[in-house]
Length: 185
Image (tube, rainbow, N blue to C red):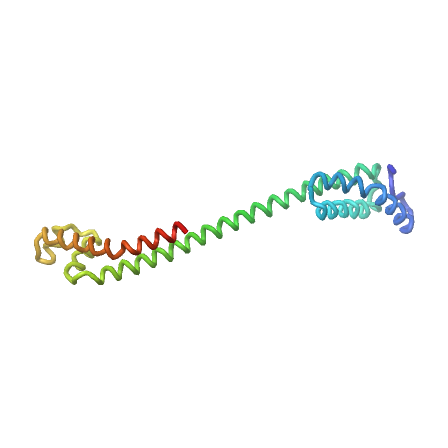
C-alpha cells in the first residue's frame, strides 16, 4: 500500500481503504511505538493519533507512502509525548521542592516561635533588676552604659548578665534536648 485515498473517491471507499490500512499497519506501528515508550496505553494512544492524523489528511493532500507517513507521525508523537512528560516531571519536581521548602520554613517558624516563647518564660524567672540589666545588654548597650543608667557598678552589671545567662541556659537546656529529639526523629 503505497498511496491511499484516491482524489474524488467517495467516503465508503475511503473507509474501506482506511480499514485495510489499519489492519496492515496497526501491529507494526504499535510494536515500534511500544519499543520507544514502553507503555501499552501510551503506545495505543500514539498509534490511534497517527491513524486519526492520516484520516484527517485524506482530503487535503495525497499521501505518497502511508507507511512512511504513519511512522513519521508516530515518531513525532513519541517526541511530543516525552516533551510533555519531561515538562510534567519538571513541574512536579519543582512543586515538590517548593512544598518541602515551605514545610521546612513553616517548621522553622514554629520552632523559632516556640523558642521565643520559652525564652520569654525564662526571662520571667529572673529577678527584676537582673532582667533589666540583661535586656539592656541584649539591646546593644555596653556594660558601662548600663552601669551609669542604673547607678550600679560595672562588676554588678557583669554579675547580673552572668546570672541571667546561667538561669536561661538551665531553663532552655531541657528545651534544647527536646529540639534535638525533634530534629533526629
